[in-house]
Each structure stands twice: as C-alpha cells, then as structure tokens.
Amino acid sequence: MKVSAQNKVFAMLLSFGLVAGCSSTGETMDDGSYGSDVAAIDQEGGSTVYGGAEGDGVSSSSLSDEERQEARAQAEQEALRNITTFYFDFDTSEIKQDARDVLVAHARYLASNPRQQVRLEGHADERGSKEYNLALGERRANAVERFLVVNGASRGQIETVSYGEEKPVVRGSSESAWAQNRRVELIFQ
Amino acid sequence: MGMSRSMSVGKSTRNMALFSWLMVMLLVASTARAELLIRITEGADAAIPIAVVPFAESGAMPAGDKVSSVVQADLTMSGEFRPLEPSKMLSLPSKRSEVYFRDWRLLGQRYVLVGELTRNGERIQARYELFDVNREQRILGETAGASVSGIRSLAHHISDRVYEAITGEPGVFSTKLAYITLAINGNESVYRLQVSDIDGQRSKVRLESREPILSPAWSPDGKKLAYVSFETGKPVIFVHELATGERTKVADFPGLNSAPAWSPDGQSLLMTLSRDGNAEIYQMNLASGNTTKLTNHWAIDTEAAWDHAGRGVFFTSDRSGGPQIYHMERPGAEPRRITFGSRYNARARPDSKGEYVYYVHQRESTFHIARRNLKTDEETIITRTGSDESPSVSPNGRMLIYATQQGGKGVLTVVSADGGAAYSLPASEGEVREPAWGPISR
Image 1: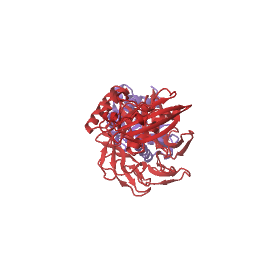
Image 2 (image 1 turned 45 degrees about the vertical axis):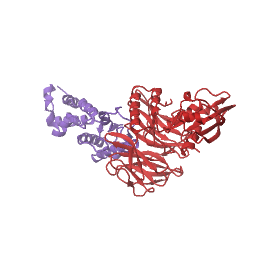
Image 3 (image 1 turned 90 degrees about the vertical axis):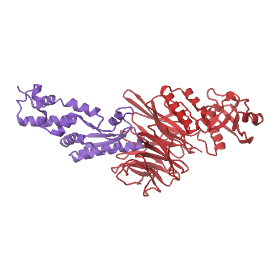
Image 4 (image 1 turned 30 degrees about the vertical axis):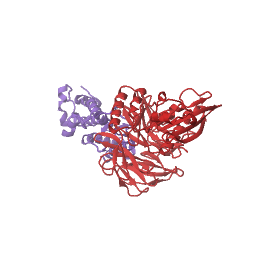
C-alpha cells in the first residue's frame, strides 16, 4: 500500500480521535480543565501515549519509526492548535496550567509561519463594572500575547483588542455562562 | 423606540420599602405592565403630599399628555412627593381666589399647585401658583411658555420650579439621560446611543452601530457627549456634538481608549489609555490633543471621575489585588485608597456636593451600588437588585440611575439617593445599559 505523507498524517489523526475531541472540550469546559485528551498529552508527552493506533485497524507498519514519530508530533501540534479559546478565573489574567501546551503549539506555529497574523480578543464576564472589565480583557489578551512571544512568536504578528463584557459567547447570568465568557480568543487572519 | 416607565416605589419604612421592592420584582418578572406596579407606591408615607390640580385651559390644547399629569408623574418619580389623585379633589381651583385651604387640609395635603394654560397661536402659555396649605401662603407664582410641540418641556419646567420651591434643591425633571440600547436579532447586534427625558420619553437615537458603544459622558454644558465606540474594530473615544451630529475622534491610540470623563470647565477629558502597555489614567486637553499621564502603576487604573470640587480625581485601581476606589487630591498626586471591606469596589461617581460617592460594590456574590459618606466613611448599599453597575448621580444629588437586570434583560433603574424610592426604565425592545445623567442646563 502506497500512502502519501499527508495521508499518513491524516490516518494518524483519525486514529488519535483527537481533532474534534479537543476542540469541543475546549469550547464547553467551564471548570477550568481542558479534559482528558489534552491532559494525556501533558502527562505522558509525545509518541508513547497513542499506542492504540493498531487497534483501529490502520496499518502503521509501512511507516518507519522516524516517520511515525514525526507524524505523531505534527498531528499532536495540529490537534492542539484546534483549541483557540483560553479561559480565566474571575478577575484574573493568569494563564491556566493546562492552556500552556496549547499556547506553545500556537507560538511554534507562528514562529515557523512569520507571515501569519493573529488577533487576540480579550473578554470578561458581565459582573462588575464595564470599564474595569475592558481593562481586564486587555490584560488577559496581553498575558496571552506575552506567552506567545516568550515561546517564539514575534510581537509584530500579534494584534490585541479587548471587548470587556460587551461580547459574551453565552448570554445569561450563571456560573457556567460566566466561565465561558472570561476568555481570550485567538483569531488567525 | 422609547422606554416606558414601569414602576414607582415610594419611600416608607425600611421594611415596607423592602416588601414593596420584592413585590415589584415579582410583578416585573411576570409582566411588564406599568399600571400594576404604580399601585404599590400607595404606601409611600414619608413622601410629601401635594395636590397637582388639573390646569384650566383656554384655547385648543394638543392631544396627548396633560401638563398637570406630567407634573404629577414627575413629582411621583422623584420619590419625595405623593401627589393626590385628581378624583379625590373636592374642587379644581385654577387661581388663588378659588383655593379653600381648609378643604386641602382635610385632604391631608401640604401643598397645592394650580394653574392655567392659554394657547396663543403656536405657543402655550402657563400661569401657575404653588401654595403652602398650613401657612396659607403662596410660595411660587410664575408664568412660562413653550411651543405647542414642547408641552412636555413646559411641564418638566414647572416640576423643576415646584420641586425647588419646596425642597430648596434644583429639580432635574428637565435634564436628559444618555444610554445605550442593544437589540439582538439572530446573529446581528445593533447598539444605539440614545438621549431621552429622565422618564424615558422623547428618546432620540444619536448613533447606531453593529459594534459596542459604551461609557457615554455628558459635557458640563450638556451640549456634547463623549463615548467609546468599537465601530473601527477597537475602542476609540469620540466627542459628539448633539445639535449638529458632528463627531470628532479624540483618542485612537494603540490599546484601550476608554472611560472618558469631562473636566468641570469642559476643556479636557480624563480617559484610560493603555498605549504604554498598561491601563493608566490620562488627562487630554481637547483643544491641543496633548495628554498628561496621571497614574503610573503596573496595575489597572481606570474609571476616573473628577471630585465635586473639580480639583481631585476618583478612580478604580486593582493595585491592592482587586479593584478598589482611590482618590488623588489633585491630578498626579499620590492616590489614597478609600474603599475597604469588599474585594470589589469600582467606578466611583461623586455627587455634586462632596457628601457622597457611589460605586459598584460586591457583597458576597452579588453586585450592588453602594454609597459612602465621604466625611464619616459610612458605607450603605442602596440597591436591592443584583448585577448592578454604571451608577450615575442626578445633578442635584437626590437621585441615582444605574443599570441592572430584570428577567435576564438589562434595564435602567432610578433610585432616590438613599435607595428608598425607585422606578425602572426597561427598553421596549432588547436591553438598555450605561446610563449617564445629564447636567442641568441654564
């Protein structure tokens, strides 16, 4: 069986079942964690985690170990980059521990694609005062920007804007709505 | 799209007021009809009883609101008066010779307002007199005129005069409110900057945008509004001349351009800029565009407002860990923290006398508006709603408007400065937020 490199990566991705899973846990979580998919990467890191590939009936025998490593790493990075929204606790701009690997993946991608621009939109939940929330949203966006720059992105690739509490993703006054609204969104342009 | 007045709760004992408030909240949740809610005000014991006698009329009057009903509604709205229902009046005098003080005393009235409207072509002339029932004295006797279409302005003017004659404070019934409405239709959001009378009537849209508009601030002469608009994709401060609609972009620096506040002389704006990387307060001279940095701290510094004397500045800073109110004796002086005891105090708005400052205050998990006596440092929560923000004090310091939520929608609520009386202004469509009480125009 002749398989192109691209197809190999795609096959790996499918076998990981990662893409959709990550993005959906990233969007809906409201307890401050990114769910088990990302946690697994954090804890065990890299190629040994996804040994279940064989069990899905995708033959990996035609890949060399090196190719497999590379494909896994690439797939992992791409999967991580599907997460583009990062959440914060009330009145803080501290990047959560479990967001760091994902932001590192974005930073590496920006570093290797110097023409890629990204807009960071900072948001706050509805509680408290609007103008303070505008500043808080900016501080969140700035925290993400700094993190990306420290990890290889260039300042010139990044634009930040704060909407404060003006653009909630979820309307309503529940803990869960607030948690989903306290966020920074990465918008690649 | 106007707003409608939906309730009015008079001040009585603390418990009665609280009970009324709870009743109002329940009623508001189930229905938005105004008539149900006004009845609750009957228990307003501490309010001053006044009879606003329907004015005599000569010549054709425009259809719609009667001058005396608007005056009556104004005085009720203030929470300080309890007008007598005209159906309970024993007579309907329109001049001094027709006023029998004994009758009004029997009805428990402290004051009686009588008057007459005369049409002269396209103008309406009002002659009105206010009497102190106990002293059997006339305390106000004036005439005023307006165009036929300006009958509400005429009524608000009379309310102002009556209010001042009785309380000694200027009335604010002729002042204006600015606020932002938000209508959401599917994926489309429409923000509108509007200006109306303080009862929500006669609203006019001044700016419409698909992107957020916030922080409207009145110039001291009431002729301009400064505000923040996201129409260019980021927060930018504009100054908008109301008469002409002419707009000037005054601050469009990298980062935040927010929280504009006029100096008492109207020559400069305090604002929050983050062009140096972090939110700081600046003063911008509007003629030259030059800015002076007033704060310099790694924390968030924002929401500046001049104190009553126009010498010092209140602002919000989270330099202690969470947002708290600070005061600088003069621009650039070392700030002094003035709020303690809650982890969240923000967006201070002082009254015009230097007695109180009002701000957003977190108590347990709820956000209220609190006021602090600047001399005694006593802090009182004056709102009984939750999710309260954007306090704005009336120019005479007797009322406060703020934004809150009813049934999941943003509404404006007006309370007397001690929190005793209240009415709310829901939008007829969508939500309303960010109220700013305009100045008294002389």
